[in-house]
Amino acid sequence: MVKMINQIYHTSHCGSTLLISLLKEVTKAYSEPFWTHQIIKHNIDFFKHIGQYDNSTIKLPSALCHFASKSNGKKIFLYRQLKQHLFKILPERRMGYIDSDYYPYFRKNIHPSLKNIEFDTIDKMNIFLWANRIMWISECPDISWINTNEFLSNKKDTLDFVCDYFEIEKVKNIELADIHVKSIGMNHNEIELSKVQPNMDNAMRVENDCGIISDEVCYNNHTIRELLEWTRNNLPFIPQYLL
Image (cartoon, rainbow, N blue to C red; front, side):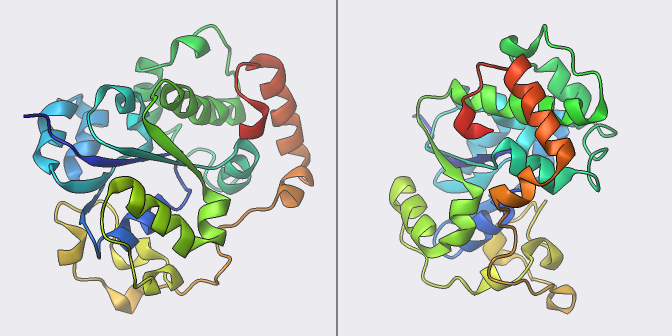
């Protein structure tokens, strides 16, 4: 029997933990369980483990986008455009994935379109990480793309769309949207999120527009403008609307 598992893929730092945390009210929800990171570190079998999540919804690490076209079930891809992604990660997080197990894992699972391109600076390496996710997801025909700015600007409408797409009950309570959900322990959990005891002592309250990044602030950044131009010249196969 083919297992049908709802899956959330993403570009990282884009609201995916909030999305899966809100869905825990209406589905068995899991947020990057331990084994998903063991794939990155020790190359364990993705399909053996994900098969345990039938009739559930699981958010996967951003490094696993290359599995999207090979797995059964309905899939959502939550993404930031490149300019917003760069604004989010530069400069504070620019070394985060480069210094971790993620970067060599991405290089091992590089999309064919990126193999002959030289990403020779830290900032270009971060473009590679974003582009590798985008290119693998682009090969998946049965996936619904959701822009992070649209999600964060219209949380209830987006949730209604996701629930209809996954064929699950609609979410009624979105109070968690007022909290930075990672601060209360909603990521990297082995257990179903509805059974996680949130650490409300650590709860960080957020404004309603938290995480929304405008085009204007991106274009006002000289480094981002230069990196966008480099991407247009060297990765012309990536659609302009994603930049």
